[in-house]
Length: 188
Figure (tube, rainbow, N blue to C red):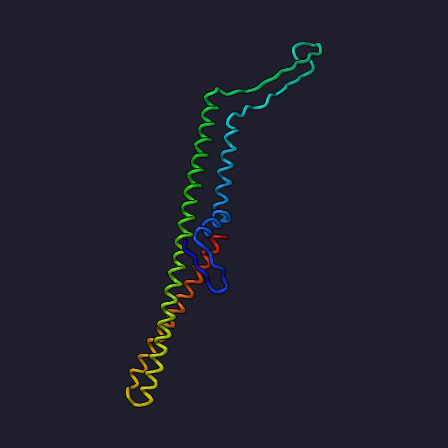
């Protein structure tokens, strides 16, 4: 497995990063909870309305005091309940597919960010090495200029090239910081 470490950070392996993201990422956790909710919702496919009890007392049909009691309850055809269950099962399957898709996307984003940071670390090492080489070049160009062996153009060129390397290094460090922030957000 690959691992990287940044200044002031602990090193982390790719597998550990993926496990942490799957365990802590709030968006993925939300999708998992939706899947559980959809599974529990299947149990509500057969929902029979409660019975209604009706009672009346008084002069209803004649001049004498009457009383009437009644019970009503509505029940749908069994096909209605079967179709409701199939609908809820379909929504649950869709939710499971969304969960699988989101898991794959999260793993992909973690890998992209992880390898992006590794790439930036290696590029930073190269730029630091180039900076030290151009630093030596600047020192030698200044020494040659002070001895009169070269002109100001060589010295200015060396300084310009070193400043370009330093600017690239600064930009790379900013991009690396953004990648580290994105990585932390993915891992929550």
